[in-house]
Image (cartoon, rainbow, N blue to C red; front, side, top):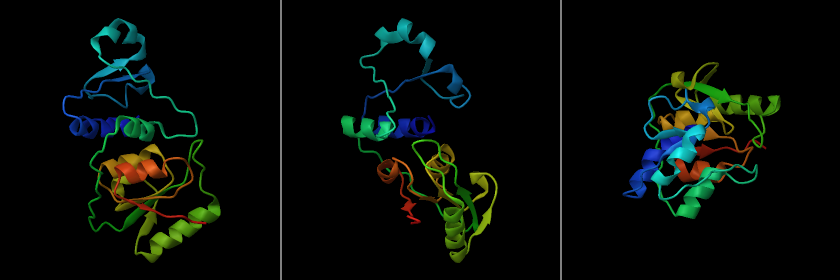
Length: 175
């Protein structure tokens, strides 16, 4: 949901006249608070005729659903570009949710060493406190990247191509 929240303005920009409404389960209400054009699943039937086209985005554990939407729609968006601030604190995001695999302790140690060799102090905390965020695909990695914090993706899931499509960031293979 974080990905759609941040990408929606760029998708609308890429296709003049496109006005995207997100229809979600009410569980996502807090995440989308203050966003425009939000509908909830329990209201879709009564609002269905207001829209020229409805697209259900489904996740099949094999294909990144938003990457598939961008390709199907032939939408090219401007990538999110990081802004380096001189902040030498780094956050490691090691926990994945299927199909993204979490990092092993050995992989976390390798990543930590790599960041330290580049002059970063690895800290626990929020991505907002970091000068760089490195880790597996997760909402915090994307939220950091969408807010122009430099990121490094450790590819353990299905979203490496999506990451390259929407973010100007680095990919680091640890194995």
